[in-house]
Amino acid sequence: MTSVLVRKLSLAADLSTSDLDALTCAVAEVREVPPQTILIDEGDRPERVHVVLDGFACRYKFLPDGGRQMLACLLPGDFCDLHAAVLGTMDHTVATVCASRVGSISRADVERITNTSRTLSRALWWASLTQEAILREWLVGLGRRDAENRMIHFFCELHERLNAVGLADGGSIDLPLTQTDLADVLGLSSVHVNRTVQSLRERGLISWTEGKLVLKKIDRLRELADFDASYLHHKRRAL
Amino acid sequence: MTSVLVRKLSLAADLSTSDLDALTCAVAEVREVPPQTILIDEGDRPERVHVVLDGFACRYKFLPDGGRQMLACLLPGDFCDLHAAVLGTMDHTVATVCASRVGSISRADVERITNTSRTLSRALWWASLTQEAILREWLVGLGRRDAENRMIHFFCELHERLNAVGLADGGSIDLPLTQTDLADVLGLSSVHVNRTVQSLRERGLISWTEGKLVLKKIDRLRELADFDASYLHHKRRAL
DNA sequence: CGCTTAGTTGATGTCACTCAACCCTAGTGG
DNA sequence: CCACTAGGGTTGAGTGACATCAACTAAGCG
Image (cartoon, rainbow over all chains, first blue to last red; front, side, top):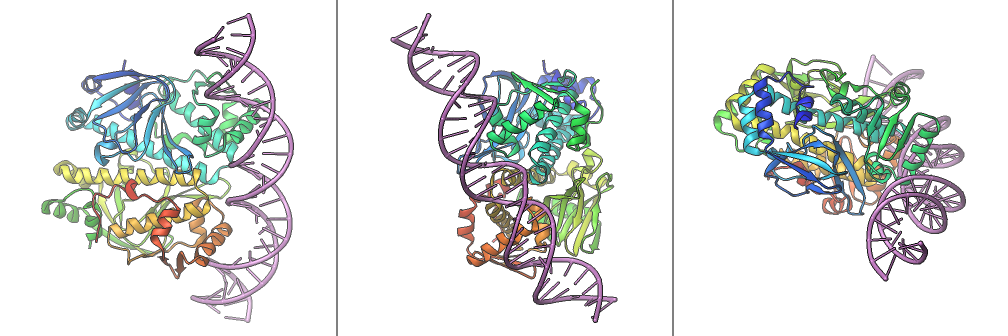
């Protein structure tokens, strides 16, 4: 049930069986959440730490002019608000994109498992730091890559992350975002996203229909966008 | 000597005298570093954790086309590579901008002080998470703010951060960056940075000469760029 | 004195935005 | 069964913000 979480954290360290037990016990609460549902809002002081177990969620901030910038895509195995336990209030919003299964761990249990297992403590820290590393790579994209490379790089990243937890089927992954959502990820307008997607389709590089994204020439794509997965700090790979 | 570090971490929690002792002892090594010097390079596996004590450093990544994107400005009190202890290899470079004083703590000592003091452990975690929060805000800037607001927001952030450790003199702060550096922070060309700076100058909003930046109408600037310091998670302020 | 580095300015080009219309599909209610 | 609506996607035309290229100034320095 929480096996995605285990698989994810196993990318960081070898978890003992007692670690596994502690972890699965801690995820005491699991909810089915509808699409477009706010999990934690800006200003909230969450009592529990949320984990995506299935589905797709994202962090974002709104601007006064109504604009929105996505700050992260939260895939199965990703924590939504591990930081809030330390920082207190949320400085951004987390919401589901599609119907998702979301687990949660009480703060007390987080404290408990990090205190008892050095390995688990490390693994959680690793999870937090890789999210930071992804943030840095997105920054590079927004600052210095053009629309097409930014999009390709993002697709490659999603594929890599999903593949790492066994959720990629060859070059094919679930991508429940709308083109407008994608625009808010990439810092573009939805119109421009549309044209860029079409260009990639026409060149036979991807197909994307009904929430299914296929990276048809993944090596070519990686090369084009200069994608190097090392920033994800996966110690080993699934498959 | 390491008082900036203390002042910085005091923004997160109240440190006991034994915490202070442990911290100052841990910073065993202090170096004077010339400008433009790489502290930790991409691919390095640093043995010690570096802290800026005086001066100005930055994180950045290069792109294959020679472009550069700054990922963070490291001010006095900021850690350079706290994450590397967990992630292993650096996925980006850290270098000084101007002549700086840089302290370092051995990994073992980091382990030791976080194990002995819950408060210090929290404070270090807080430091790491606020850097992440800054990263998110930069992402919003690059994605959704125009050149002028991006620049103003960045200036306000620097002012706020320096002020928090007592390094702002009214609206005036040290800004040892060149316009080209600033361009790499903001994801712009140096030419466009130049014009934007001039526009701000002409309107009497800032002055910037010889590494000294003055935010002349700080309230107006904050309002213009919709600057809200809460993402910095300063629990209290200096002054 | 020439060299370098930072900053400035003008001319020109382009990537991506905005606005607006239109299509298609799925869902809803009369 | 059809009219209506709403959301997502698609397309075209016009605009604008920012990039690029290139030249030039001023300051610092061996």
